[in-house]
Image (cartoon, rainbow, N blue to C red; front, top):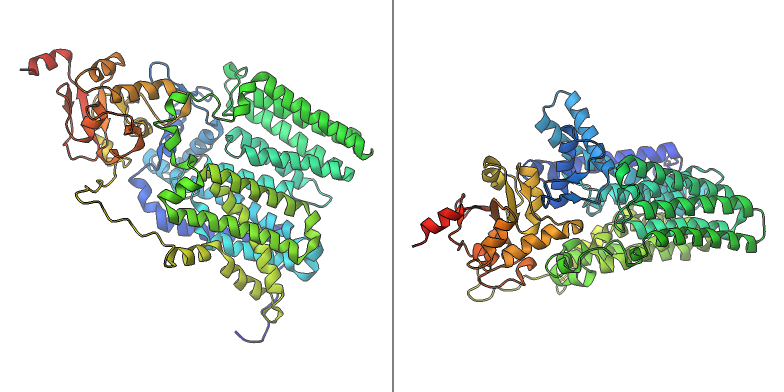
Length: 618
C-alpha cells in the first residue's frame, strides 16, 4: 500500500447504486454456490421439506387445482391438510413453466428450477441488508461518506460469509429462504427514516407476505409491527408513516389469505399458519392502528397512548376469542404422543446447548455471529451516541436480542441472527476505517474483511482446546453405514413396483411421494399425527406377534427400511424384537418378502399374502 489515497468511492447510499451493489454481490454469491452445490442436486432432492415441496409443485403442473391442497398420498385414506403456503408452490410452478419455454424438457426444467429458485431470493435478502446498513450509518453522517463505506463493508461481508446462505443453496426449494428475505425487508422498512413512505409500505407488505408464507419469523414480525406503533407513540409526526405501514400490512395479509386459502377453509382457525384467527387479528390491528394514527397524530401523548392501547387490545381480543389455545404457540395443537419419539429430536428445533453437545463447531459459529453482531451494535452507538435515538439502531438491537433468545431454544432461528449481525458490523467497519484516514474508504473495506464473522469462527475452531476432537470408538463398536437413504437411486425398486401404501420411519415419507407413485403412512409434519402414530405403533410392535396385524389393518403393501438410521431416536422406545429393530438387524419376519438386496441403502419389503405365510411355515 502507498500513501496515495484510493480513488473516490461512488455514493453507495443512493438507492440505485445500493441496488447495483446488492445485485453484484448476489451474482458473485450465486456463482460460488452454483459451483459448490449445483452438481449434487441431480442425485438428491435435498431434505424432507424440499422433497414434499416438489410434490406440491408437480401436482400443480399436472393440473391439480390451486385450492386443492389436501395431500391424499399422506396417511391415506384421510390425507393431510398441510400448513404450508400455496404461494411458494405457485412460484416454483411458474419458474418451472418459464424454463420449459426455453425448450427444456420437464426433467430439465425441474432441475433448473431447483437450482435457480433459492438463488433468486439472495437478492432481496442482500438488498435489505445493505439498506439496513445504510440506515444504521445515519443520515447525519452522509457528508463524511460513512453510509457509502458501510454499504461497501456490508457487501464484502455478505460475499465472504457464505454461512449466511445455508437456506439459499441450489436445491433448497423450501420456504426458509423466502421467510428470511421477507423478514430482512421488514426490518429494513420498519427501521427506515425520512419523509418518504416507501420504507413503511415495504415493511407492512413484507410482514403480511411473511405471515402468509409461514409463522417461523412471527416473533420478529410481531415486534417490528409493535415497534412501528411505538415510533408513533413517541413522535406524533410519525402518523403518516404509521398509517401507511398499518394499511399495507392489513391489505397484504388479506390478499395473501384469499389467494392461498381454499374458500371452504376460510372459517378454519389454526395456530400454525395464517388462518381466520390470525387474519382477523392482523386486519383489526392494522386498521385500528391506522385509525389511531389518523385521529391522534396531532394530539398530546395521552391521546396516542389511549388510541394505541385500544388498537392493541382489539387485535389481541379478536385473535384470542377465535382460538385462545394459540397462546401456547404454533405447536399448540400438536399431539403430545408424537413428541417423545419425533418432534423433540428434530434438529432444527434443538436448543443451542443441545447443538453444542452434538456439534460444537456449529455451535461456535452460531455464538460468533451472535456475539459479534451484538458487540458491533453496541460499539457503533458508543462511537456515535446519536444512534441511541435512531429507529434503525433500536430495531436492529431488538432483532438481535430476540434472535439470540429464539436460537437458544430452536437453532433454526440462528439463520436470522447471522443476517441481523451484518449491518452493524458493516457500520462498525466504516467507523473504524474512518479513524485510519490515510487510506480513505479502503481502510473500511479492509476492516470489514477482518470483521467478517467467518474469519473469527475459523480461528476459534482451529484453536487448540476448542477444536472438536472425535471421541475414540468404543472397543467392538461397529461404525454406522454410510447414509444414502435420501438419495434418488435407492428408491428405484419402489418406483418400479406396483404403487401401494408404504410404512417406514418418519423421514422417508416425503421421498416416497417424490420419488415414486406410492403413498406414505407417515412423514415429518405435525398435522398428520394419526399416520405418524399408526406407523410408529406398527413398527414398534413385536415382529412375531402384533406387527403384521397392525400393518394389514392399515392396508400396507410395503415396508421400507434404512439400516443407516438404526441409531436414530425414533427407535429409542422400541424393544429388541420390535419390527423396526428386527429390520435394522437385517432379520425380517417370514411374512415380509425382500424385494432388494439386504445390503442395499434402502431395503424394500412386500407383505406376503396371508396364505403365503401359512404355506411357508413348517
